[in-house]
Image (cartoon, rainbow, N blue to C red; front, top):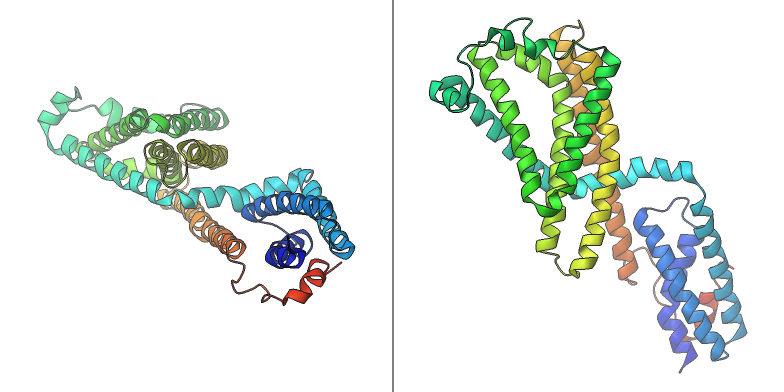
Length: 348
């Protein structure tokens, strides 16, 4: 084997490993995976070069690169606080962004279905009879009725905890039954039916303004979290049907990890919506201010996903492109055959 040619062929991956180990203050998820992959590959290549009695300078250079890379890998394992921060600033928003077409689609179908049902319940006595609903129910829809007192009949902190637990359960069902598709669709459909019937009865009682006053403050963020859970769950189920270019096992493992990430992150999102439902929705604040709080929380989440999450995904894709295309912009042009040894020892 021509050792100079071998070194020339692999020089760029060695330089890339050294760059990841020493020149990047913080690595993205894709870069961390790339660091580990290149570290293992370079270790194998060094072992092969040692058996072939390659140039000692080349051996020393590669050993030094591997030492720096090993230190980077080991130092990253113990920084729990940094990893938690990276989860919420990179991993979670990126996972939600990658699934955005699924959960936006789920949200559109949900809202359209609930709206159509609400209009039907409001305008059709046949619909109310068919669904077993009362023609008039002031104890439910009237001022001080069950719809309104539901939000204030319990202490705020206990109610917020109850709401958080219930919503987290619904989200978990939508996420992890998505593997079977139909159960997730059923969970989402039942929630849309409940919302549509409530809206229809309140509209029939000419109290739609009260419905939106009590639903919108917490409902915007809460429903978005349910949509994300449903969309991610259905994406997991569809991966079983169509794994793409990967094997079915590998595709399911990858999407399963993304689903688990979303499940953990949504507990925080639902905690925030639970606080709003427990403390803001039933408060004495003006209706416009309560709705504004909910709208601000919803806007913050959407910016978090579509701005921060999108930028993380684009950065990871750019990193993967560079790693997979040695001649891509940002890397030095290939050196001549006689410079292969010095290239391996660059930066040592």
